View 1: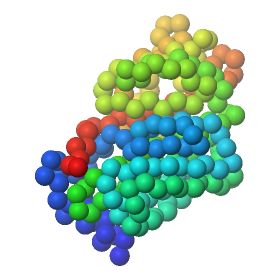
View 2: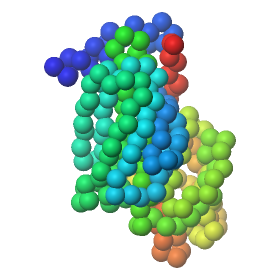
View 3: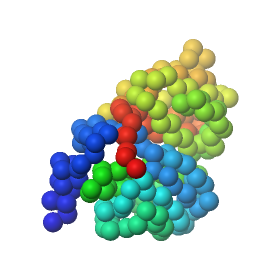
Length: 217
């Protein structure tokens, strides 16, 4: 039944301003607040035993999915503002490599939205200066950088680093002194592990979206 419900979203949405193409990766821009930290679409928060997630949907929450590397949960007929409680599984989801994605689907107007939330972890303590999509900030060791695919982004370290290979993702170029990674944002989601000369690690999750999703009111 849920499969047919999803097909309805994808193929029969009436959306005069823009038709939703399931083959396109749209910008993640769902408004979320996690344990007091706010963002639209992409957010890194300090590690905790549990997380209180406040989400504001652009439309009706006819179907909401909560997905990690370990689980996918579905909820139906939610309102425009919802609070979601997430407690990671200690063995499967609290290992520093498992982010959370929230997806919201609406039947009538197709005002779908997505958000990716990642969690700091003691495995990743190598700090960096991040220059991503027009914003600059200091990262403590876990970074999400979302931008249009192909745009140039930059992450700077105070010591030489080396890259671990990423599965199904193109390697990112290092500067000659190995302290700067300046790269064109890869398509969709890619996770890179960066090791400093000190032995400390940094995790970089890049999100390269293909288009913006225009929503009617």
